[in-house]
Length: 236
Length: 118
Image (cartoon, rainbow over all chains, first blue to last red; front, side):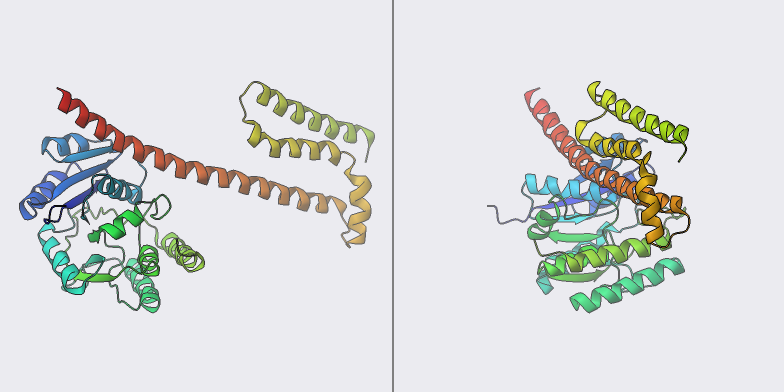
């Protein structure tokens, strides 16, 4: 195999025609060595056309299956085409692709299997109080379980090596909605090494983010159930 | 129980039972999913004679109003039926996801092959 590592940047996108051109431009500028894959999660706007015009690879899921399902499709693509690493970047422009090298540096330095880009490690990122409490609570639980302090478990800005993304590409190993602390705990259970890297995230003017879909109460119930299930399930 | 009421419930049960069999025969309803409804129809037919069992049972359990026991039993059975269908929906959702992901990947492969051929 070639000694040069191959990277696939997976961009899940659902109705992102407004931000996608800029996101793809920034990704290409900052990561010229990587292949870019837009996973169009059943968008009803011009997301797939816009993506194709920029010359990146595009997968069209015939209908909307949810953020997690779209990202997992990207993992499956990466497995099929033999990539070494996957970087996930949301299509709504909240992640700064110029910070991917921070993820790579941390992965190399810490010998980690997965690096999560955290918006809370530096600077102050504003977020709703209910969400902040949820993130705080669940990251504490994750710390108790994994021993690693993950400050931003909902972050969709991640770098994963082959071992991790091939594991998550399997049918029931990734949720359809939003991967969160539960996935972090599941990865720890599978003995993958986790690390975090500081990244800057931009708040969208209209507040629309792929992770804002949860209602706080539902989010807490959903995560509690997911965490209990991770604890109850046997390793696979 | 009055004979007319008994007969009425009995006929409803028979009607439901035949309706389900007919739906399955016309392939409007999958056999494996219809079983649970056939049981419900069967239960309804038998419930027209339920008072013969329920009344003494309710009295023994200290329930002064026997129909309350019937409602409890029916509610429990309906919850089981709903759970059964929720499991099926959940299974279908998972299969749907698998299918849509496979389609997306295959479409990509197909378009690449097509481009190469051109």
